[in-house]
Amino acid sequence: MNRKWKLFSHIVNDIPLKYKFLFIYLLCVLLPIMSINILFYMQNSRDTQSRERENLQISLDRAAYELTQIVNESVAIGNTVAADRTFNGKLEASYSDLSTYYETYDSYLRDKLRPYTDQYPYISWLGVFTTNPTIGSGGSYFVLKDSDKQSEWYRKLTDTKEKVVVASYLDMNPMNPQQQRVYVSIIRKLENFPDLMTYTKYLRVDLQLDKLQELFNKEQNYLQFKLVDANNRVVLDSNLSYIAEDNLLLPIAKDYLASNNKANGNFISSLGTASYLSGWKLIGIPEQARFQQKQNAVIKFGILLTLCSTVIPTVLVFTILQSYNLRVRRLSKHMQWVKNERFEPINMYEGKDEIGGLLRSFNLMTVKIRNLINDVYKLEIQKKDLELERVRAELNVLQSQVDPHFLFNTLNAILVVCKKHRYEHVTDIIRSLSQILRRLLSWKDDLVTIDEEISFIKMYLQIEKFRFQDRFTYEIDIDPRILSCRIPKMSIQTLVENACKHGLQSVKGDRRIHISAGLDDRYLIIKVKDNGIGIDTAKLNSILQNLHVEEEAGKSIGLRNVYKRLNLFYKDRSLFLIESKAYEQTSVTIQIPIQLILSQEEAAEHV
Image (cartoon, rainbow, N blue to C red; front, side, top):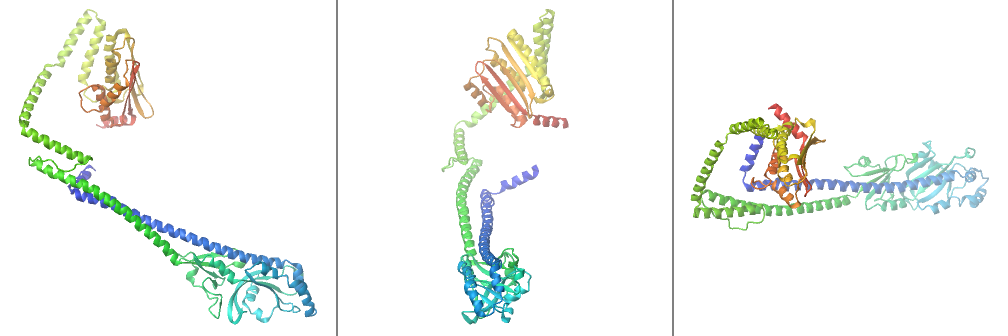
């Protein structure tokens, strides 16, 4: 993986800067913007079409509902008439002559059906056909003739067992006998009373088709309507008259009957669920100009959005990249001059960004280099080299003069004398000091167990105990589960030494140090706490800032060393916290993720 990445990195680094900027613009700016705009246009177009189709479907359903209500109300009128026993009895009666019938007609029958036509404007005519020969044909009552029995409405009614039929058929236009017109009628069998069925009686309700066309015209801005009967014939068209000499009740094309066909954009709605409306449909044909208008609006918006989202970023990217490219090219040119020992400054406005800072640094560097060359730069370099060699030689001499075995032999000689004269306290201290020195020289690994670290700290604290006598106590509270965990060596000891040196040395009363280490769900927590003089806020802030300083000189070297080693071993995931109250106490807490410690131990086992 690293080889592939290095190869890719080399290839990228070999591409000229202007082509990199071009690739960045094309792949990271122009292509994403164009892709997003195209996807937005496609989605917006689909949403617009979907909303428009939903609106058209609502318009069709609204017209179909109102048309169904008209038919249902007409059927309800027929049911009311059929349930009137007195009315049916008058039609069933046998009249001795026409004068007797007309007396009944004038007194009862004349005004029986007229209120319905007055109250419901969509009803053009309401009448009864009967086989009772004693009734005089006229007004709203007619005796069935052979021509009536040949009519389409009569055949539809007699061919079914249903009591109610909605029929569409052609008949003569009463205003112009040379023309035909389309009729839509609700025909009802009047047979509610078995004892009044000597003669066959039918109630016919003719609908006012111009009122139905007015209903269609209310939705004309959205759809053109075609009313289709159960035989798939066009009964009523919102664009055509229902009165003509020919071309009426023509079969509708099959393409129109595909429900919500996206190919032709038609909408179809059935007229209710009643058996007498079975097969009747209302077809809505959308105005293509309306669809095109909506589509054009989406296209215009998409083009405007594309222009705005492309031109403005292009101008900005070009301006910014040109600024970078120009200054970097100038810097590259002057760096080539430096290779030829020409230290010329870059004369241009550098800017305040990172490249501007780089240009200023370069100009400052060239000025300093020229000054050094013109003065005594080479001579100073030679002197410094000689001085450095001298210092290194002296350091080597000093280092060679220190023999660790000499220190151990001397300490052992002192230890023998102390035992001879029974200086028990001094004996313990010298023994601890000897063990400390030997441990320091023998520790080769950077990571040691907490058990080893605590043993080393106990030897150190014995020396401090001898130093402070009865005024010094310490407590060590270590969770046995973590004794085998490995941490950077001298991590805890440095904190303990720092507490004794800076925290407890100036305390006049009892001096206490508490060392604890344990586990929680995620971390190994180590804490060193003392009751020393504490640290005021300003000094504490200074110490925290010094932790991040790179130079080794200055104050807080021990704390900085512990902090940096923790970050080095645990990838900046450890926590180093200092808390203090002036003249009361100071505590230093180290938190190390358990997962990192376990992973280091597993890695050590596989080595």
